[in-house]
Image 1 (cartoon, rainbow, N blue to C red):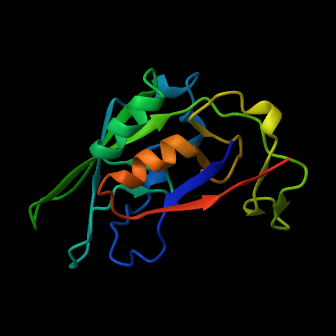
Image 2: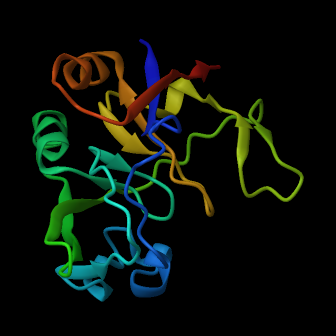
Image 3: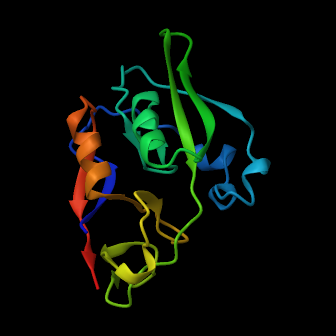
Amino acid sequence: MEYFRIKQDPECLEAVVIPDAIKQIDRRYVTPEEADRIEDVTVFRLDGTDYPEFIDILDRQLFLVSSQLKEVFGLYVPKLKYKIVIVANSEKGLVNTYHLPIFAPVDCLSEQSVMTPDKKNVRKLVLKQSLLGRKAIFKVQHDFENIIIARLDAAESMLRRNLRGIKMVRVELD
């Protein structure tokens, strides 16, 4: 089986950036066990004079998906819980809703993965295939980085839709 890391396309230079998102939502609480510590709806105010592009995936501080991408996730992980994140600039009339998926992290990072010296980022991602089971979309256990993986069929389903700002990178398995 093939797997792909799904992430925000770095070529989307005009993508919305949420200032200090992790000050309002602590990343440590984005787990099924701690999710009750996160508000059901969080509003982030956008500042600045530009008009950002609201793409379908944001992963700079938190992993957020659009409503359309949430529907695709629902096809493959129907019991996945979400928190709502509203991004708004009332002066410009800009409002968009994103969803924060609450994944149970899967400890499947292989020893063959290559980390940065400070262990905060994964330079080369390798997953232990024996620990993946039949999961279609899941989060890899990592303290500093949002690593979301999609099985081939789920990745193809995302590609068939007109989603913007998503990059998929094939993942090595051992």
